[in-house]
Length: 304
Image (cartoon, rainbow, N blue to C red):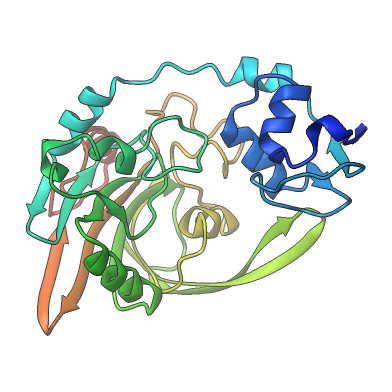
């Protein structure tokens, strides 16, 4: 279903996102961004930014969206900011003059532009740790992924760390508990991951070094070292070989999570990098729910 609107003179130079709220109704910004990104909202048959200032006689097309139903489904109870700060401050691994490293808890986004109304960077801006500066995001970690996460304290450090991540000079190790027995004990996944920009199909190269730490016929514990940093890379690759991660509600085989803890069993276990020839290595302890599933699936990991 497609709806088309022609911009009248009263809305000339109005931001697209504001026009949508005025004409359609109260729409969360995250949904507007998502629908523009996925091509469900277009202006003059093209994708534009939500901040684009529309002009008289512009045509706005909206494809197959029931805003009222979407908004109703997205009612979520969020933890108070102070509680989120405390739960993550208690997990700080390192706090120096340039950055903090924390063992991120599952269930909180790391930065804005996601479906969540709260995110770590904005929330930590209110923390005493950043009272004389501001937090800078330097890399990504999925909302439901736990583990090592770095937040810079100044622009210079943020630019340096961002460059290290972009140049693949930050070495990351993840742990994942996945369904079934992974056949090969080690190797490299070198895949083309498919994503869509509207109707346009895009193939992205994705490379990961993997090693099976322990396995049985029911489940496997894997050590994963991504070389590239594609969105949902590890989750997609494990799903592609028929061994999706427990707790993954997006890349899953029907009913395999039944009776299992609903947390995503993907943990950013370790990060290594060098600054001015000084080596930095940070490891994050496993969450209790992760250890509980290891025990119930009879999987061994020595560095609990």
